[in-house]
Image 1 (cartoon, rainbow, N blue to C red):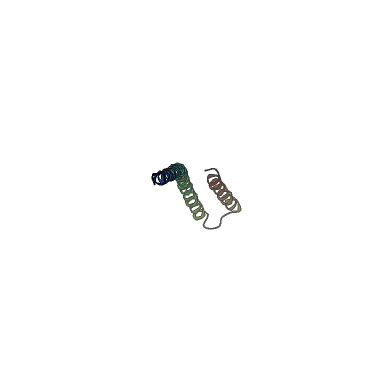
Image 2: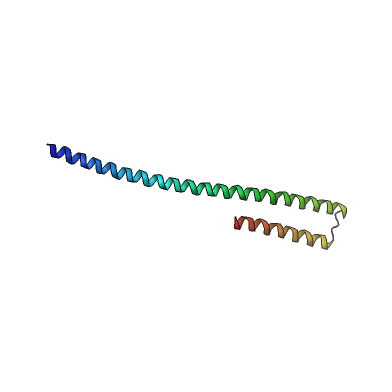
Length: 102
């Protein structure tokens, strides 16, 4: 009868050791995921600040275009229209580069 008790105890010890290994492994995975989340949070914060800067620049350009439009009384020349399109294309390119490289 002592043999069965010993065998059961050894099985239980082995099971607990495997459980401990699983828990430690899970802990390491959780810590790695946490580090990755911290990195992504910092990257998103950086992207957010860049988007804010780009947004303020875009608003400034829009105000300048509105002023230019008022000065020409709505009859914008081809040159003004071309400059507006170029400005918009440049802003879109800047935003795309920010998103792509951050």
